[in-house]
Image 1: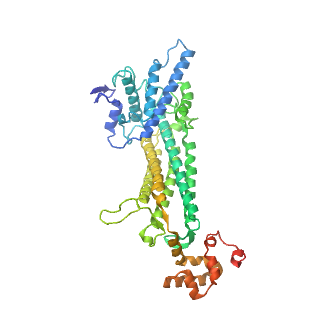
Image 2: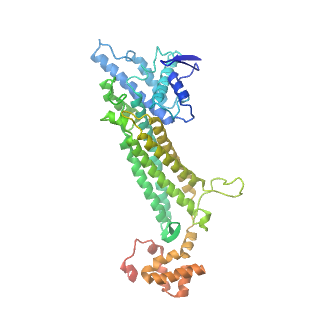
Image 3: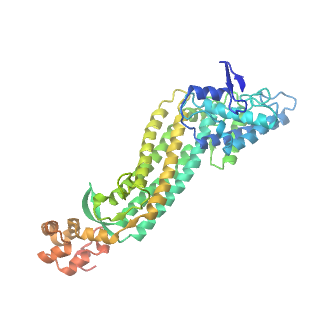
Length: 482
């Protein structure tokens, strides 16, 4: 065991632990099991890489310009900064994450997060040089690991990096899902079905039209998500505690984002107003609202397909793939678990959206203390949407079967089909057909044979898929000239 101390007092921790007293205090103060997002941790590693590389460049430039002048505190040993940069690159790969003990739900605006990473980088670097963790007289978490940095610029910048990477994945997944629906649209373009409004039979439609509505909604999602990068590419790194850049070299402020862009290969830009970027989180609200819109579309699609494939619909027009046993007591029961999973993910995103909106509004003066929970909720929503898209694609659409013959038969037996005949026979006669179809449970052809309302050839032509699915009708259609 080893003992570390700060101005509050002393704490004992395992000898080999790479975390230090600040992370340990936070883990005790915020005792909960909410796991901090690994991708955010890794992004912090990349931010610190950029900070160390820029600090080294600053030390070299300062030494050349002022060879006989003292350097700022922490810059006396560039070899230490170089070692920290190497360790930060390992953090960026996810190494040492088992030593990150600060939970996602916390107070302090992220100071505990920053210090936990500082301690990991400092202690891992100490071990590399033959020292023991905690021997901070050689490499210090504040003086060296946090050089030219503040929690208030490092942590939000890292969050934006983590979000952009996950948004990239979400964008790809949405596009793949959209493409899958387009394939179903093409394959079922002329497969007739009954459309439903307010849970009741409405007018003739097709599965192609149904799937086109889904693919178009997902196209909008894809477009909106692709624009999210513009909203969050502006970072406040170099702004320090409140965006003024106090205690940070101007050289560092102007160069550090360039280094970060090289490391991450992301289109990051330096804020023109660090004070604004530090304290206002409305861009995060905007981005999550776009994610919520995608969740809304996913829920709608999953709910529709669940209903179409349900026992309540009677004869199946849509057969959902059987993925797992549905009951521990009812033999042979299979439930729409993928649809339910997608709907559950959507509602978790809705709840996160409320949390994010409320907490972003809780920013006070120059800082928002709730960024750790805001960021964790955003990353959780992204993870859920990515997995929901993947599951819908591979576990639902891949095995989805359209029973086109069954759907066609249901349509021809439905009074809803008589709507297509309104221009030919009018409302009253169409109502007669509909009523006979209902009472005798016969299809429209049989009903027309009994009532003799329309010539069989005209009825047959009117019921062709190409005519039922036209956008409106022309007079030439009505007169038989088309």
